[in-house]
Image (cartoon, rainbow, N blue to C red):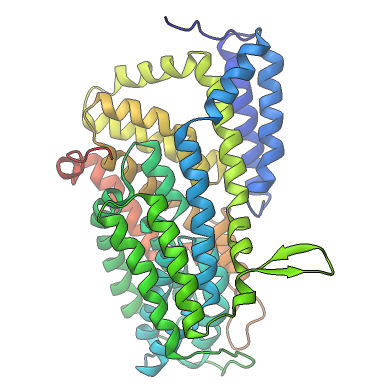
Length: 459
């Protein structure tokens, strides 16, 4: 029996009011420099409250919210983000970045070559940890100051760091954006990563050429006060993310790959002496709390996990109104061809990215619309997931009012021998994201890659 649509005071306007409040609040917080997803929690609670007040049947609205939260996809994303946080934290503490820097220095890279190597270091680290902001926070203080004595162009060096962070955010199987784009479209992570390389690698090739050609400059004043515990032993830790990626490409379950990857990172790190047992898990008897790398990693996934649960509850209330079904029908009526459907997907996630200033928020907000509109036009889950993720890995890494560019510019402050750069300069020199934007537009307009990606099946 068909469940009757939930009625709201004000009709469609009342049904949309909670979502409009959410988008406005998140947009305001994002433009104000909200540091992470925890700042979005009160906005979502407020939006849920507005929905409850406007719903004529408050019990039915409450049940719809719980139904939205209880979806299997929500629990998958929550567990994935917690496990990815643990894995990323263990790899960060293992000295992987320092060892990659040691390798670049050992082969004597200078000028444009150093800028390319900085890009590749950030690619490896962001792929291994799945976090663009974490990559910038860890890699920039180590790699940017060294440019003062290696004859690099500072703006292109920061652009290379931001580009490398973007690559992993877009492609890494443990990136929150990869997880969100794949799961909302019913696609397996390994297949999405394989197909996404067809979009990311051409953009990365353009970036490498640009950084090699334009990254060099006259050497500046030697940097001071830059210390690193660099040694080659940390390079062995690369086996862990490579193993996780291999497992996912072999279509292992995401939870299986992340659990085994975290275990391997802990055991290998201990064997190599990169951290001690008490650093993994310990007890602070004075404060009566537990601490350690594992807990730090799990906490890293708490913000986005609670945000996801609350957001999907809000989406559940909207779906119960029947309005989303009408919006999908409207889009499908105007998306009669694959190109038109992809245009709707690209346009909707672009608008959501600007409204929310957050890539995962944007994809979760329009994921259902993208799935149903794309399915009706015969667009496969890999292709839909790729359009979503490639699109959200452009604007936030290019424009000066998004967190990644603001962070990249801020991390250049007070570095001896190197200038402080603005968020606009950082984004302007992010060649990889500019190339990604061209790639996704060309793919949608010309259909390039559509035939291959549309053959992908769901897990």
